[in-house]
Length: 512
Ligand SMILES: Nc1ncnc2c1ncn2[C@@H]1O[C@H](COP(=O)(O)OP(=O)(O)OP(=O)(O)O)[C@@H](O)[C@H]1O
Ligand SMILES: [Mg+2]
Image 1 (cartoon, helix red, strand yellow):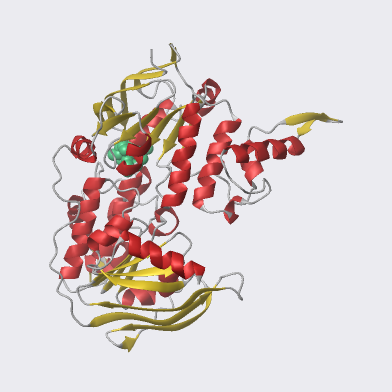
Image 2 (tube, helix red, strand yellow):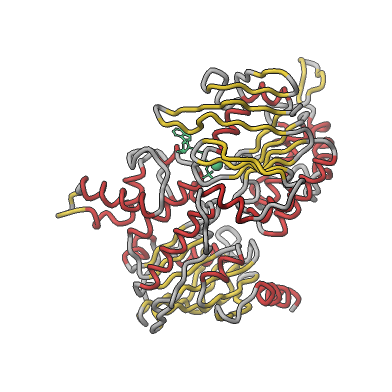
């Protein structure tokens, strides 16, 4: 008998069917991967399971440990031992690790005027949990002071503070580097050895291959099939084909780069930390990109790549900035975001929630936001034109939505990312800087994004891509800079670059 059986789950949002008769069976103590394209319904299915959408708001039945469950809310599913870690982490940045772990679940001791929170106990217990997940931080450390990789571990520690039988992780490694991802996967294997089952949602099929016992594929809100990885070796291609419903011959578009003169230059760029003025974060970077060229920036998390891009783009990061930005040989003013955009520079942020989107507004308005002139006549926005532009990008990027009037807040994670991208593509910049553009994007849509990058380059623009996915840098870039601790420590042409060479230049720079 299965630990969990979800039978015939159907979920609708005002007429949109997100899940249509989905079945999922998870065995005790297994790692069960759920994969599918952006908007396929993975997160929605997990929200049904965990009571975020309570019984009565979906059709079908959930059986857990042999009996039917009708969760009225997330508290009920937690009581049953089902713990979910959502796609967007939910920790409170200005509270400590211990406070986050016991938030709403604080241990108490009797006091003079009734029960009081037992912080001593909570800290001791936190210490123990942190040891279990292999996180070397103090319980009093604030969440804001640790990176996303560690935050993910805090979420798991929090799950372990409750009695967990089934742990659900929705894209836990999307913003982690390889080392942090591997540590997390190891931890899951450790939990499995203790009999804790796990549902893992991820777009990184290589990671899934490392840990999954079973893979269930969801397409367009329905279960397509399940693979048993213990019985046979399952290839990535088999999974991809089930996900996208067709065979994908190539992962990267074919290009014949036509590289021209230098268009974009960053010279002697220095940036200090926004709060600690004495800390130099970008230490004299020189970068150039030529007409028609796709330039990559590789590096580990924390190397300073995002800080570099943001400080150039309207000085949206850092202070005490010095150096020059040149376009076609002329120094340009990039001191505000408006000036940077006017000068033809665009930056697609890695953090779509924080900087990229107006969440309450619809897709159409978000797409045209950075180029209102492009949809206006005589300074009046032409609604028809705006609709046509948004519809064009919806089709080009295959944004999964009911209409372009849908608020972006309701889109799946990957589809929100596509809207951010559409906004900057429509702004038609001379230089497009992309920061982790395919994070959380499914394999099919990645190909579409790469194709658009290739089209921009072919149209004579420069594209600068920051990425932690080495294969995509190697697959797309004509030249790759390697960044480490605020400096460029290596530069390779696309032809000579390899994963090993890039890693080696990071390691040797660190040792020097
Ligand atoms: N609150 C909501 N209102 C309306 N539609 C919604 C809502 N939540 C989800 N949807 C729709 O349901 C579908 C499934 O979304 P879901 O977030 O489950 O996808 P996903 O498989 O997790 O995708 P991703 O890989 O991008 O995270 C999408 O088309 C989405 O727009
Ligand atoms: Mg999702």
